Image (cartoon, rainbow, N blue to C red; front, top):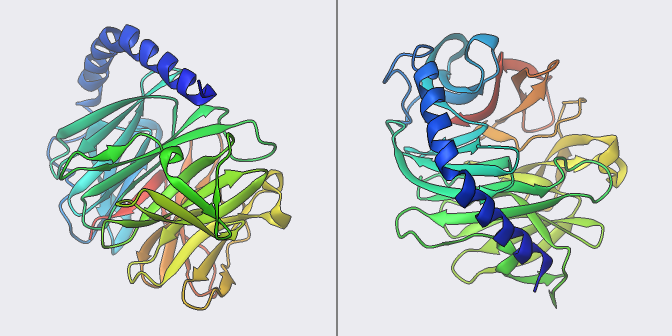
Length: 328
């Protein structure tokens, strides 16, 4: 039996034995969180707002929204807490770490009410919603907790069609083509999905054999094919023509990552004017600007933005925030 299958089975056992405990803990957390925000102040209704996870001491982990035109201004704070979050088209995905071994994927409606939940074995890593709000995806670490250095990590990435309930628990079940040839290996990992507007095509990162690839995927046919190497955590632009991504310095993740933009029609790569290490899946604020989180001390992060054409300089967009998403 495949090693990852054994791990997954073990995860199910852990989930079953901890479910009752989690329900109790969840209720306690929610009672404490309710005094932090104003009920109903935060929604996922499409509009000129930014959503993020707060890293401020007063409301750490809670979902916040700010005006897209004044992101440093007043923020609304929700009682809902997440470890990772993303939203689009009135749908949200919230990854919550239940314990040292388990994560709960929660699909949220516009009013932050739970529509569906998926228990997983692993630690939260990435989350995305398609532009329409129909498709959601997640990545968890099954072993290890970082994409940097060495190869001692394993991820599991799933996709769910919220309209039909159809989906897959792991992209490792998809047929893989590397450089035009069918490919199969035990060390294949996927992470960092981004969706096209048709709710079928997607891009993601795949690692195998010590290499990391950008892959172009098809949800309906359950296939992925490699496009190019050293492209991680892609993020498709609103107009569907470019991908923002992080690439390892000198093809060595231990040296950190830099942000760039790939033009899909010309294959031109444009390095962005952000010299710092960015270990994040960037988001597009609009067709001209990308945003991303930069850690600041222990437990704190800020959201920064930079022009997508390589010009300009980084700008502080949202203090004390991470996991940004554009609701408009």
